[in-house]
Image (cartoon, rainbow, N blue to C red; front, side, top):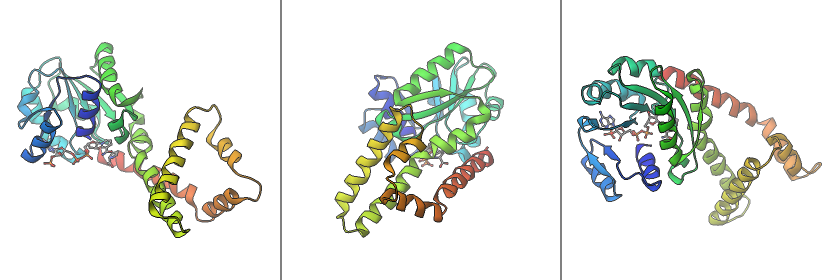
Amino acid sequence: MGGTLAEAMARAGHDDIVVIERSAERRAELEGQGHASAEDVAAVAGADVILLVVKPQDVATVLPQLAASVDAGATVVSLAAGVRNATIEAALPETVGVVRAMPNTPAVIGRGMFGVSPGSRVPADRLEAVVDLLGAGGEVVVVDESHQDAVTAVSGSGPAYLFHLAEHMIAAGVEGGLDPQDARTLTVQTLVGAAELLAGSDESPEELRRRVTSPNGTTHAAITTFDQHGVGEGIRAGVLAAIARSAELG
Ligand SMILES: NC(=O)C1=CN([C@@H]2O[C@H](COP(=O)(O)OP(=O)(O)OC[C@H]3O[C@@H](n4cnc5c(N)ncnc54)[C@H](OP(=O)(O)O)[C@@H]3O)[C@@H](O)[C@H]2O)C=CC1
Ligand SMILES: O=C(O)[C@@H]1CCC=N1
């Protein structure tokens, strides 16, 4: 995710990014992509905005290193699922602002979705700067922090749900006799077209679905079978499990 964001920000014209990465191999890779890199967290000294993109389980290890080197007046943006602003604020000097942000991987093509929640000590202009910066990777909504677990489950993990749907549509197409490349092309263009139709429409997804569904036709056969298999309920239960896991990670 850190590499994805660095790429998106570089593409948007930010030429002052330093990627802190402990693996020499990965550092070489990132430098190959045009990013300056450093090995030590101490390299955050002098930075205005710091994106913290380690796994939630690693946040506690990195925070003391960050606290030792971060500039007074800097803003730390944490992208770690579940980890609360208050936890990060407590570990950093009081002059350092904290923002919690939840990205998703389509940020790599500038089509990401970010849910952003300011902590208790971020002035409006700093929050605006963070929103602008993340905007390089896609859309940004500012939400109350109490909604972050739901944001994580809907948009943070969401791309995986669509990829999972694509896996099964492609597999079924192949089972129905298509060659794998055709099954992929048909599936991908259908998902892209349907998503863009939904994005550009004032209609609800239910209504758009109804318009595809001819009486007693093929879509009706598919949706009835989905219902018999509890697909809709399964999706809702899965997203709720992701909300619970996000809360647990915090
Ligand atoms: N993947 C996704 O779609 C999304 C991820 N996120 C959040 O982004 C964060 C990162 O996730 P993801 O990119 O999937 O995880 P990865 O494990 O791929 O990336 C985490 C990186 O942090 C590095 N790291 C860990 N500890 C340190 C340290 N002490 N100093 C320097 N580098 C360190 C790791 O290095 P090493 O390999 O050496 O351990 C690794 O390169 C998570 O908190 C996740 O919740 C949020 C939304 C979406
Ligand atoms: O799976 C995860 O925990 C991270 C957070 C959202 C997407 N990936």
